Image (cartoon, rainbow over all chains, first blue to last red; front, side):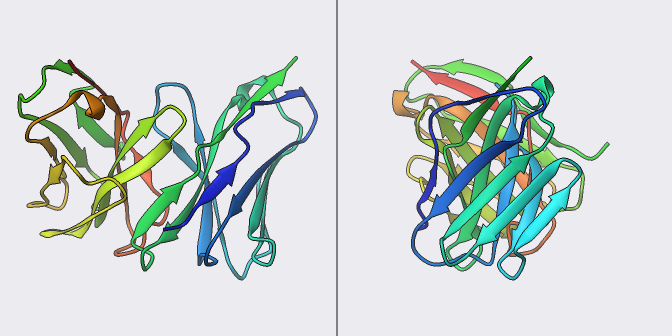
Length: 112
Length: 114
């Protein structure tokens, strides 16, 4: 199976700064990678999907990069706001693409 | 409104008492999946289904059963629950057949097995 590593320590940043979260994976490179947001006690919400042939993807204040050589994806939130505080999960397909493995997530706290 | 619904949202039961958690989606999605989420372990896939009557095991299928008789429903069955199945369960669905593309998650079912 695919193993995913996300920083388990919470990331605390000040409002207005850029938050950068990391997702590292082992084994084979996936065809795509996804990022989700999860608030306490709620289901994850899809944010962005980036394919292996895409270096970068943007959506409003969000930016995702995908480096298949480093086996790493970076997730950026620019001009962060307290409402961005949540846990962010990355997910990769495996098992022929039919299964999905999630990282344990990184908690982001944006302070005033 | 496009959504994935789960019932019940909270359930406390005892060891060995069979239970079913229902999952339904109204988006005509082909792919459906069940996950459990535990502290420190994250989301782990239990079973998934690529279409009606097609199901397969995820990472942690032991102790669980599923069925996919209709496209919109994907119930999770615990024939003989045990305390190690105490967890937060999520159902999810996505459109792309055979490829777990953008997944829409349900609100979760918090299960406690005593």
